[in-house]
Image 1 (cartoon, rainbow, N blue to C red):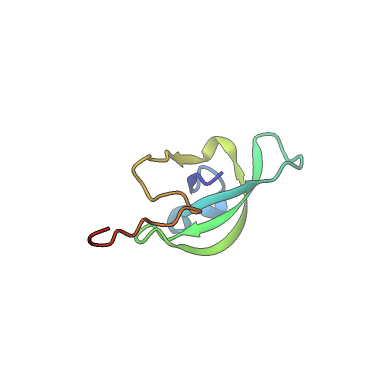
Image 2: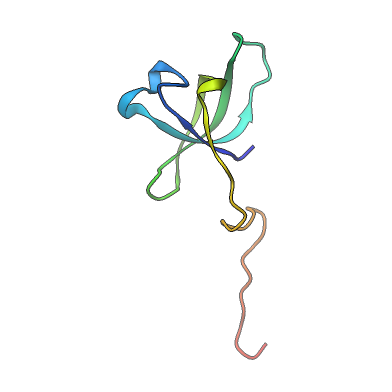
Length: 89
């Protein structure tokens, strides 16, 4: 979970052309669907800022998904507060 996935016309015709969607996946539905298809839940991401725009549920072909690998030098985990250093301490 937490992977950033590019969803375009290869994953579903509804996301073809200028309707491409970046989705930060929060869950994958385990209910049976058509072979090779899956329901994903997550947040659409603004590619310029990286900020979440809206919660979405999408029905897509697994083979058409393009997963952006997570990097270790990105932001700290969500539940860890940033360290504040003070002068002289």
